Length: 122
Image (cartoon, rainbow, N blue to C red; front, top):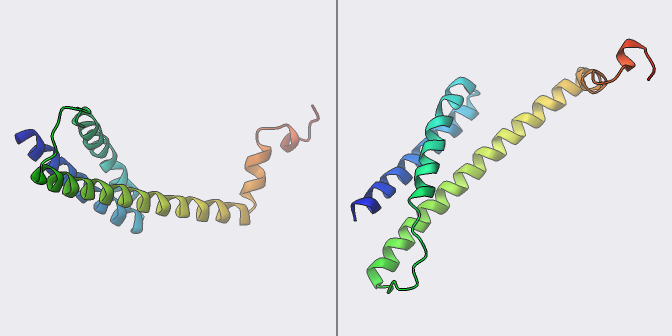
């Protein structure tokens, strides 16, 4: 039972971390955002390692079902928060790429891997 409490605690910590990550992304505080990544990976690694093995001999009880439903809801909530953060990151990357392209940097970056910018032919 103590392992389940630890897992629930770590899942709550992941939820809080994902909320903080979103706030840092919104405020464009990328240093703080980057500072969370190691802890997030540690939490994810712990949760993966503590995932129960599939056991066909387990007998479902109403209490176990209710407990697993609550745990599953927390996992789903964290998954949704992670997706939300990923969408925000992708939107910011797209905005940066569009800004660079409008400044003409997009074409320079693409040509920098060729000899065209040196007016040489291959």
